[in-house]
Length: 114
Length: 113
Image 1: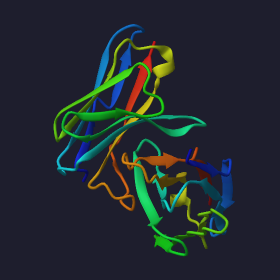
Image 2: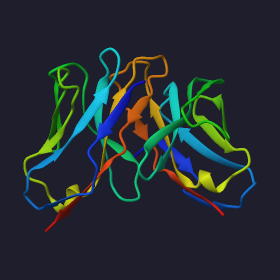
Image 3: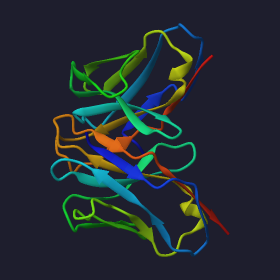
């Protein structure tokens, strides 16, 4: 149903390699977010975007970069993967800069760094 | 900074029992409050929300009331079903320009037949 898809759904990679995760939306929403989910921590914000080429850091941005060259795509790159980046990554979108809007989430990417 | 605190889980209940999951928050201003649910292997889905004090959000038999005086947004359901087994997240929407959601750590609910 979703106007938001993440790829890949699962990935295993080796320590030190770069990894890129993709979030694609068909809703034409302005705001896009990357979170990671870890046991005991809930969801923590990595980076977010408020428009094409407009991005900013979240609370756990070290070791990650993002790019948004088109409204519909938001890429998350792990520059040199480490075992501490083993996690489930979620992308989310929201339509507007109003606080009463919730997010729509993708189905997640499970990343394992070995 | 803004934060959300949820009760530790797992919460284990028998079918048809009453459910309460506690959520309290710390925030400046008047945030919007949300409950999300995550079923195994899936992303989070919006369950309900409330945008101002004394508002009650409701959906699928779940309810939560925005209590500014106690900074709480507890989730309740009168009669749980096995299909309600999931992880529940309380969240608030901050008032800064990122409009990011700040999540609690989640509470796992297990409902036994």
